[in-house]
Structures are given as structure tokens and as C-alpha cells.
Image (cartoon, rainbow, N blue to C red; front, top):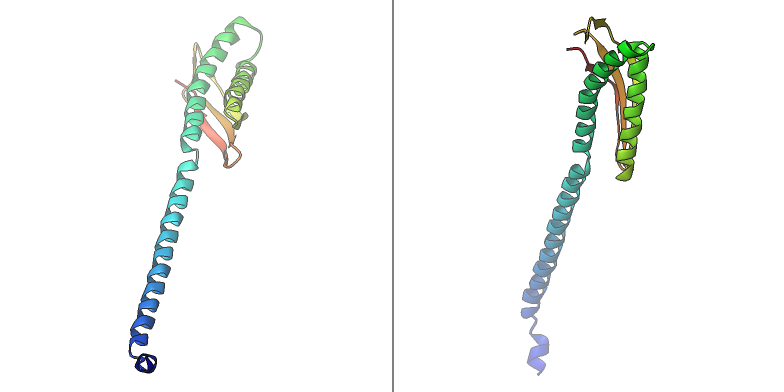
Length: 154
């Protein structure tokens, strides 16, 4: 028994095994943190509502052209100007879009900034433009496009 207490040659092997074990644990923790960081950063990029913003912008562009044509037709049947009809129809469109997106917990705002509508006979002229401010907020992302210039002429 006395010979086992005095023999210290195996302690270095045990100590180096312990050091290797601790370094492998530290390396595993670092690799795990790198994977988690990559997951969260890629997940944050996916949460950006680019498709909703793109849909709002494209719908507003399409409906602005339709509203301009409808405002021209209404101008022929009532005493209001094309601009007054356009503002009235666009505010109705804004209210409808707000209600649709409010159901999903998102807030949007569509406001007219400026408009240059000129009618040539029965059509809106080709250089007619409408400037629209589009804002979007879903609680995590705030987006504002000021102004979005939309050509409504044919």
C-alpha cells in the first residue's frame, strides 16, 4: 500500500484528461451558442413583414388607378371636381384597408399628400400622378413610405 501512495506518475495523465474534458465541454457550449445565435438572427429576418408591405403598396397602386377612373366617371354625373371625388373615394379605400388589417392586429394608414389629376376628354391624362403616404405598424415593425408616387394616367 505504501508503494501506491508514493507513485505519482498517473496523476499527470488524469490531470491532462480532465483538461481535455473541460475544453471539449467549453467547445460544445460555444458551438451551441453559435447555432442559437444563427437561428435567432435568421428568424428575425423572416419576421419582417415585407410581403404585407409589398401587398399594401401594390394594392394601393392598382386601386389608385381604379379610383381615378371612377372619379372621372363620377365627375360627369355630379357637381364635384375630379380631385374632390378622388379624395372622397380614396378616404373610403383607406377606411376599408384599415378595417381589413385591424382584424389581423396590424395598423395601416393611407393618406393623400398631393395630386396632379388632369382629364383629357373621357380619360385621365398620362402625366397624372398621386402622392400617397403609406404607414404600416404591426407592433414590432414600423414602416413608412413618404411619399409613394403613383401614376394614375392611362
